[in-house]
Length: 117
Length: 115
Image 1 (cartoon, rainbow over the protein chains, first blue to last red):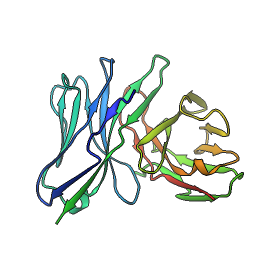
Image 2: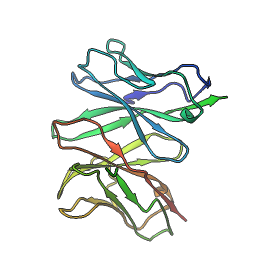
Image 3: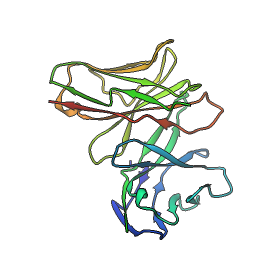
Image 4: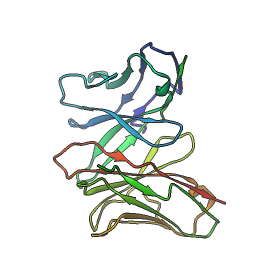
């Protein structure tokens, strides 16, 4: 079963406006972590923001904030004051821990954001 | 402080050849992860290693793929007898010892093309 769902294959936003990228997740764990990564056309994966399941406040990093709604199992990324350089693929990911001591990230399929001038 | 290093950035192999991908984690990081990204897809976990130990290889194909993280030197992902379906971007990530930050930091990736 898919554990991370990003329902928006593509999003468009006008420069300087805010945009929300959706992410819902499925887990039975009590403790988990949620991440957002940016992948520009050059291909690298850039860490943006992290939210722990026990964090009481929504995470913020500069223009990025995470709208964490635990009961709804959603972790949407909000980018304020969009810039042309924000045009990229954005991936939501969840950290999975196993009883064997392993951990890994499970990724969604991504959302392609285009910022228009 | 150098980030995660991967080389080569681009690798072209003919069917049947071997591909060897290298990853040097960030300084102070002892955990290494390999992920594969097919075109238009998200990243898929392959293997999780610590120094001289494979912790979890549940995402690795059973044949032709192997990974190591020796005591000295980079982590290596080896693909033997490559086929066209192995063409993908391979990303390495590293993280500090457990108990510190949870974040995995990624390298720039190696783009493998099998002709």
